[in-house]
Amino acid sequence: MKVLLVNGSPHREGCTHTALNAVREALEQDGMETDAFWIGNKPLSGCIACHKCTVLNRCVFQDSVNDFLALAGDCDGFVFGTPVHWGGATGALTSFLDRAFYADLNGGGGRFYLKPAAVVVSARRAGTTATWDQVNKYFGLMQMPIVTSSYWNMVHGTSPEEVLQDLEGMQVMRVLGHNMAYFLKCMAAGAAQGVSLPPREPAVRTNFIRP
Image (tube, rainbow, N blue to C red; front, side, top):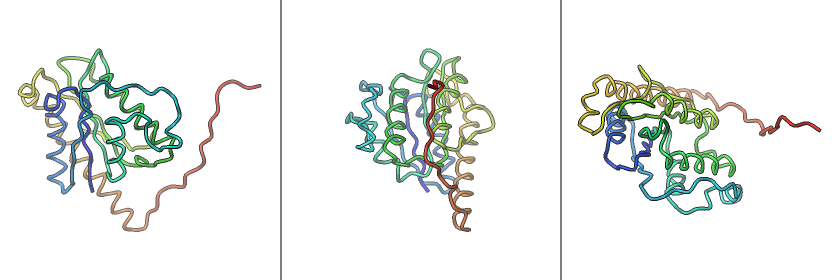
């Protein structure tokens, strides 16, 4: 079983990477395979609602979003990481998730269906819980079980060295990794015993306007 850890920070090996690395170590201790994906620090466009993904089953823009989608189908779980920018997730990660999940949802890809997910957040001081709530909404819409820890998944510090001194935060990362591994093992055990995925109904889309 493989878990993909996605770094949404513009810094490849900064505070967010440090938090994700603690999750990775716990996952590997429990026998999980892991892989890392950095979204990069080049400009990422937001979704332009062109709906080309309904035909392509990927985004029309050729950038790290499609690189991620090419990997996602072979992964069993996901951990996304982001620093806090202006009280929320980075603009790049928001654009990245908007396009990646919309392309999969619109294209019928099923890359994320019932695969567990979590977000970890790093900050100097504040904005962590708002960011945690923000990113978890993506998982809820994608029918991805949200894996939690012993506290909200956050670390504090202005450098990787300071993050490592956040003893509670680092413990939360380790517990998250172990919880993710446990959840994946439970899913695998259920599948081995013949527990099938739930039936999927065709989507019903309505709005609040009636003739």
